Length: 134
Ligand SMILES: Cc1cc2nc3c(=O)[nH]c(=O)nc-3n(C[C@H](O)[C@H](O)[C@H](O)COP(=O)(O)OP(=O)(O)OC[C@H]3O[C@@H](n4cnc5c(N)ncnc54)[C@H](O)[C@@H]3O)c2cc1C
Image (tube, rainbow, N blue to C red; front, side):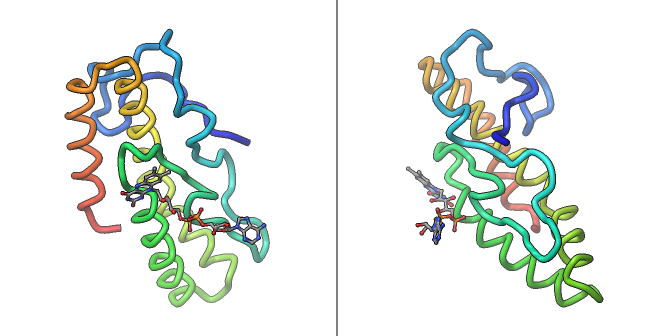
């Protein structure tokens, strides 16, 4: 099921000051997405863009996908079962990935309506988040 923004509140800064306008056409919505619901089922798990695909404006999708691989390998090595490893992986990754997707969508929306300057704080916030340990 495709992800839809819950509202226009900025995920990275946690406030509404840098939000994209509601009425604006939103090219990112629908094509850039985070999976709603579980990323894992039984012995299967989705990672990378299949789970969370930011709009290109955040330039972070490949980085997130690589992080996913590293974190997944780490958690599988720490747990007694594949299922437990998947659960730990999803717990560790969900919020970070969702926040970056939401931020990227907000940036894309602002750029689309030529409010690029207002997107700068979002870009900074996204970069600060990606600089934190995965
Ligand atoms: C314009 C643009 C600019 C970007 N710039 C950046 C950037 O600067 N920095 C950054 O970090 N990210 C950037 N990204 C995002 C980045 O490209 C993606 O997030 C990243 O490639 C995701 O990697 P992935 O392995 O999850 O998916 P993908 O790279 O999409 O790999 C999935 C692979 O699976 C294959 N596949 C699909 N279905 C099947 C099937 N049924 N069977 C077998 N194979 C299948 C596909 O052909 C593909 O090769 C950008 C994206 C875009 C569109």
